[in-house]
Length: 401
Figure 1 (tube, rainbow, N blue to C red):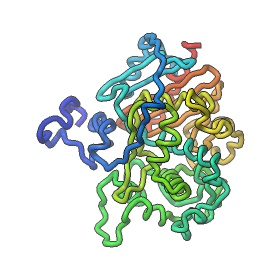
Figure 2 (figure 1 turned 60 degrees about the horizontal axis):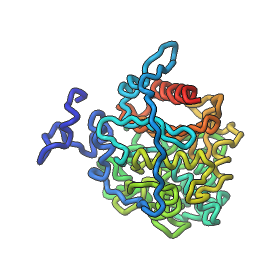
Figure 3 (figure 1 turned 180 degrees about the vertical axis):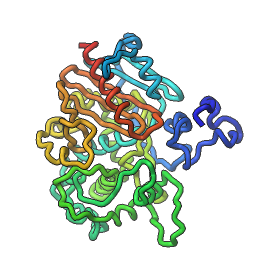
Figure 4 (figure 1 turned 120 degrees about the vertical axis):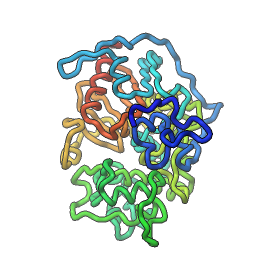
């Protein structure tokens, strides 16, 4: 299917069968080139609204980095070549508060909402920090105290801090190959996949799935276990404690004051439950504004939006014993995971958010650098490509220093 003319995807009334995007193929290359900027045409979504009165314009003074040579694994390639080969849809670089480089490809433009997958987790964490500061959420509360529906599940005696740091003990398997039955049920409960179950007692939606999360014999808080449903659970906690719908409170407390220029959106299940683990679509410019807000310790011209102590903790929390205690440590072997952000453990202490299929927020406070990347990579996770992009981000930082 990779020899398809991508310009013909979803063109025509109706599009030819081989060019149609469906729930069965929307995350597969090359269909994802179109679907990642047209999620609203495939899956139900709710808007995350902007506010013209609070919007922030990006200061721009562009330079040409396309022929910047990137050193990686004893070879050198031009930046532009790497971006094309890695199916990059957009790359924006902000240095000292000024947008200095922008790259767009495929169907993506500066004002095109693009799904960011697990960077949604990182943004949900920022909202959580705001709500903690407002005494809406208490990190030490048990999940079941907030959501009694989780009694009897792996979440029953886990704290909200456990949920944030991915150290809840559960038997969930994050299997992007789609072979694990529990992952199939999860994806179908979110509305992202067609349900294959003919069981009359099949799950009614995402909350039903979360209310049946199987326990593990391992204790909470001892082992890093990446599990996307934990972040959907956090979205549910936010709705229950605040009494507001997730898209609305995300809009009012984070996106609007962050200065976003365009309406974002988030996928929801058939009952309206938000996919806070991975369902946010946002424009490249607006994601850069949020990245820069984080780099500036949570403040911009609209005020102190995110508590500074929340930013300091997620980027600087030192105890990484739990993160290092994982079954297959490949990403950031000297790093950490705190409140749904990665600490890289690199020389400049960069920290970042990462989403499948090549989505990145990269923040280097030392070099006053924010980079965002959106992509339609064919593989959900490719560690070799990730490491190449980390080299790209570091080389850009050196070139601008």
